[in-house]
Image (tube, rainbow, N blue to C red; front, side, top):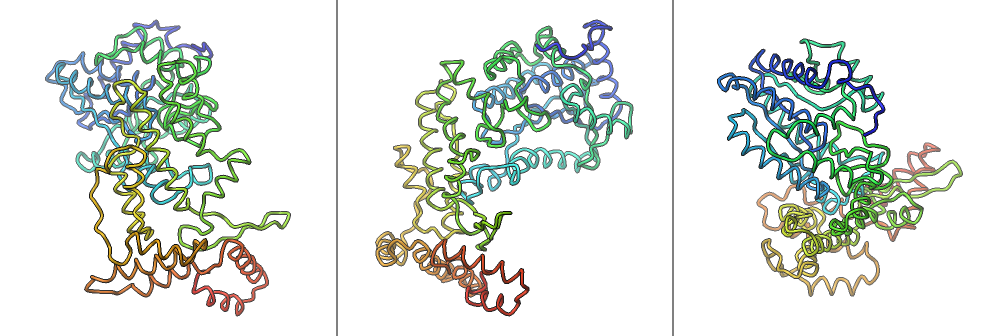
Length: 507
């Protein structure tokens, strides 16, 4: 414990303060019929909030416990496995305890939509690992699932109260935000949610310090039968010095560069929490393959940056080639998504790590999915259906890396684009990847339209495929992009049109 902030228990005393918080929670709970939603991440703050609300409502007569309290926990599907196991089991125990104790508490495990999951976007679509200027993960994995649930609750009941474990003691920036929202209070202790209509925010422990939270958790028995001392042990095992708190949601900032959340996160310099877990606890060495993948996804060192650039397509997702010139006049292409080869590599790495985790980990992770069958099928659909990668590599990679048959459906043999035909195409095009891709994509586009009653859009798709593969290679694309930029600077409209016509509209 840090002892760096004034304790709320110092003046009033521990029992009196907790009693006052219970009374306030009860008063707000009984004041209307608006359902509550408590954000639960398994961390110390959300555990303290849920425990306070649980105990306060439990003191009420059963006939007054009529208003539902929804406990939502967002599983990004790439959470640190130790935390994910803790939270998932906690939700199960919580549901049983709520039934036994006649509590109006309903736990919910929320996950991102299949099309928005981390691996579908990175391995399927080829999004590069998240970075500060392209932070595509947070909204898809965390914010959207929670907001969808809250909106649905608002639609059903007209309003909702969000009970959150955010605290002023966490940071000066968050304290200023909370103070600003506090001025807009529409009820005694509720503040409007600036990002969502008809939802109010209640923060019972906003003035508590870090030490206050831990003191409460160590002094008061967990309401649903979990052991708070195990939570403290997990925190200590996840940090090099045993002091920095673990963070498992976006409502609380990380402690420096130490972070405990998504094991794939590249938004911090180093995953100190997982590193400390692997180094501090021999029983958690099974997570080492995950740490290796996370570090390989990182792009901060010069060698990693060059590797990242080499793994990415010279074209953007739309097929366009973008040119950038620095202050010294050095030009380069702004790279796009991961190439087919790179995406296949990441799939192999994840499946390999999944196999190793199941072999080396405890019983609880023997059937753990680092990547689900649903995600694999969506990735396969994107590769074959959208990217025209008719090689259909995914089942083959799965069988090679896991040693087991692919559990998804078998693909139908295509007489035009079967393995032997693709091998002939490879032999003809040689090392020219763009020529191979062009012919393959054109043939697949024609195949997709073959049995359609209405073939509208065929020529548009064919033109797009030609535009994507127009170039002889990256050097040719760079030179044409540089020429295009120079023509724009000199406002040479006619020359730009001529260049675009040569490239089939690629510019």
